[in-house]
Image (cartoon, rainbow, N blue to C red; front, side):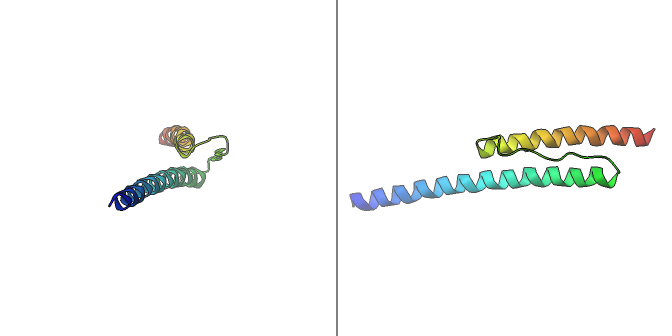
Length: 88
């Protein structure tokens, strides 16, 4: 019975760890998608866009996601400025 409990706990722990890894991967992919989408929108409006993000400088997926979010925010400001210019 003790071996069964240990096996069950080990399986549960592995499931939790793999679920967290998939969640990080999904969040990272979503952040990359957002950067790509806003970059494409800016380019379609004729803006020069630097959408590059050095993900190798970030050690963890959370840091990589933060770098992508920061790039998205930078591009969002660029988009807002471009929209304000065209509205004038």
